[in-house]
Image 1 (cartoon, helix red, strand yellow):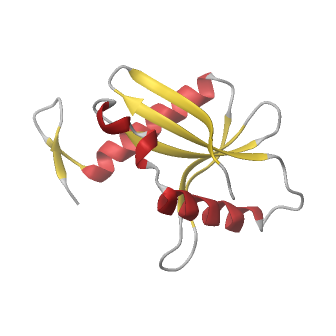
Image 2: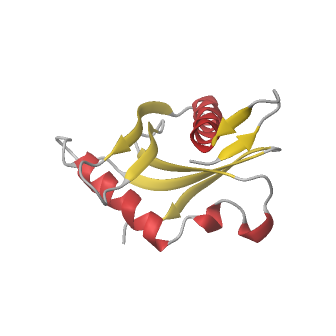
Length: 129
């Protein structure tokens, strides 16, 4: 795990930085009216997937959210870093999560970019196909 500098002069781990980005994204989404269902949902076993945030939109849609932190939008920004492999893992984790529900709600996959200037919300950033 990498060590990154922070504003306090102490080092932050990559996990701490990621957790802080998730906290910021969660607060942003809650301010937009979404409700937290689950955080850091993981499938069992190796090679499974993880979903940073599972949220419920006002219209009942279940929103699977990938959070990406970036210092700038260079190189395509955070959304560009959610490649096919990551998308596939998130979709597999979502399918696993949905197995536990009695009925299937409408679903979508969003990406939240957390940057120094704030959050950028990409709704329906990718499909399950």
